[in-house]
Length: 346
Image (tube, rainbow, N blue to C red; front, side, top):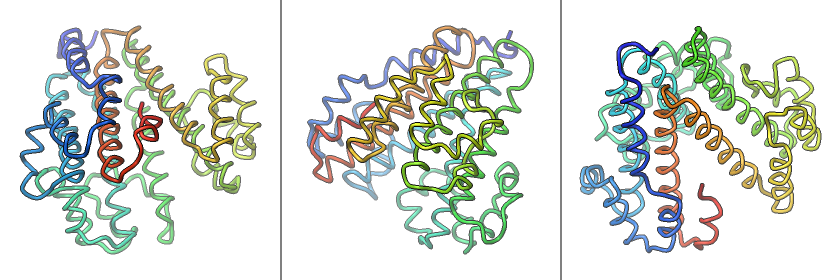
C-alpha cells in the first residue's frame, strides 16, 4: 500500500485531467488553422493564463511556445501537490527529468555562447521564477566545465564526475541521461508491487532510448566506441553483456537483436526502419518508438490503476500535447504544409 495519500483518488484526478487534453482528432484539425487562429485556440485550450502572462513581451509562435512551457511546469507542480507520501516520491522520479532537461539547455547555451538575455527571452523566460538559478549559471560561466561545476543541485554535479575538462557537449548530455536513469532506478529499487511497476516502465524507456541511439549511430556511421558510450545501463531488451555486440551491429544486426525478445514488436519496428531507409530519414523510426513507448505506458497504467503509473501517464500525455502544439505552431508560422505536420504528430 502507498502510504501518506489515497492513491486511488490521486489516480482519478490524473485521469480526469488526461481526459481534458486535446484528443488526436482535434489536434489534427488544428493543423488546418492559420497562425492567428492557432494562438486563440491554444489559449482557449487551457493555456490562457500563461498566454496573458507573456502577451506583453511575445507575439505569434513565440508567445505560444513560452506559454506552453510555463503551463507544463505549473501543471507538473500542481500534480505533485496532490501526490503525497510514497506516491509523491515515485511521481517525482519521473518529474526529475525536466530538471535534467533544463541542465542541458544551460550547457548548450554556454557551449554556443548564447547571451543570457536571449535564453531568458524564450527558452528559460524570466517570468518563470524556477528559471532564475539556471540563468545565473549561464550568466556567470563561460565553459562547459565551469557551468557543470557550478550547478547548484548536487544531483546534476554528480553526473559529470567522470568527464574531463576537454569533454564535448555530447559527452555532457549523455552523462546527464545516464545519471538520471541511474538515480531513477535506484529510487525504485525497493520491494513492493508499486515500485516494481515503475521500475519496469523506466527499463522500457531505457530500452527505447538505447535502440534509438544505436539506430542513429549506425545510420550516420558513428564509431562503435562512440555508440557504446551512448548506451544506458538498466534496460531489459539489451543487457549490459550485449552492449559491445549491439554497438558493432549494423541496422540489420540491430533488428536481429530485437527479434530475440518476445516482449518487443520486431516486425513493426522493422517496417518503420524500412520506411526510414526509403525516406533517407530517421523520422519514421523515431515516431514509431515514441508511439510504442506511449502504448507501453498506457497499457501499464491500465493494468496497474492504483499506482504512480496513471499519474505518470497523464504527465507524459501532457508533455506530448505540448510537443504537438509546439510543432504545429512552429510549422504553420514557417509555412509548412499540413500533410507534413500531420505525419509528425503523435
